[in-house]
Image (cartoon, rainbow, N blue to C red; front, side, top):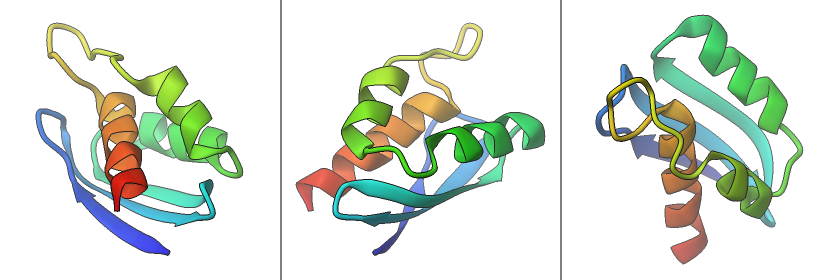
Length: 82
């Protein structure tokens, strides 16, 4: 199923997600550091959402209280609640 998550506190503005049965099929960040967000998307493809959450939750970007990986974890948590 496809989802759109509006990020908060990061350079990226949205995360487009395709998640089926708790497994990530595809992730695309809108905006943000192009190479880093493409790298994150490639690394998490095929992973279980729970594992991505465990690895990415709470990661900070510099002095910011969040990051693109942290926002991905938040998006996946929201999907799991739905």
